[in-house]
Amino acid sequence: MSKPLDFDVLIVGAGLAGASLAASLRGSALSVGVVEGAPPRLSEGWDARIYAISPASKEFLDEIGAWAHLDHARIGPVYDMRIFGDRDGRLDFSSYDCGLETLAWIVESGRIQMELWETIKRQHRLTLLCPARPAALAWDEQRATLTLEDGRTITARLVVGADGANSWVRRQGGIAERFSPYGEKGVVANFACELDHAGCAMQWFLPEGILAWLPLPEKQISMVWSAPDALADELTALSPEALCARVADAGGRRLGALTPLTAAAAFPLRLMRVERPVAHRLALIGDAAHAIHPLSGHGINLGFQDARALAARLASLPSWRDPGERAILDTYARARAEETLLMQYTTDGLNRLFRPSHPLIAHIRNLGLNLTNALPVIRNMLVRYAVSGHF
Image (cartoon, rainbow, N blue to C red; front, top):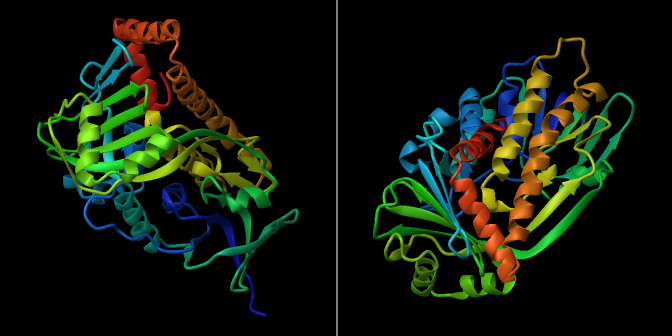
């Protein structure tokens, strides 16, 4: 029997959160292993799955050397955002008013993933195990032992679960989760526009769900429509021409006629909370630790900040400290508790607030948007928290 591979930190899952954590440990003395089932592949044309990268996450990607290597001709800066209620409510955000370069950057998921992958492939003191699939995971007092499907054995002082919302690692570690399905799907597609969006993101709280148009370079947008299941199925079944007309009409044709760039795709939406993001020699990051409604576009930013916070604690350890110590993991959990809970409850609450059709509730929620819009100090504080994680 061959000798087990042994690491200080073993990351299971090399998605955006897992790969960014691995990359952020490059300057440390820790040995790192990464287990991933398959390497990423770039889609042809525009990637239908995009993310709104906050300034804090852009700074993190810059720190680990990924941001500078992205194709900036394919990145759409967001300078302004307009939110429309289901009646006359409206809320406007401006990067200029908040003293920010931009509110966010719209980036294709596949482009970030590929750049992070290439970064960790070149990294010293890192072993990338791919393709590799876990079969069993057990812990003793000093180490965790992961057995792969091909029979190889890996030991580590700390295991990081970065394997998504249906995390296998989380289940093996005995961390309970609670899923709350929304009965909705996120319908995504990209379009070319007749009119220039000028770097402005738009979002509508409609009776048929929450519709967002996010600016891509030139006269192009990415759409995310959080729609009830029946409507989502209807939208994905439409012809490209019919979908363009439906989406343009839902947004009041503010960007004129639309033409398709990608086919529509849909994925189920649900809230997921875990009882705790750490256990004995185990830490969870990204979607393995939390899942939120996409109306804020903040999900991947939570994952990046998880990776940043955990890496900051691990990389600063003296050589004699054990990275799997519970005290270290507890400081990570406390550091991430506030932002995660705030974003989960805020997005869940807004989604529920704009569901009821009772006239009184509709009046109150739209009045709330208008009141917030009339108070620049509060409005700008909300923006600053969304982009940096603090006021």
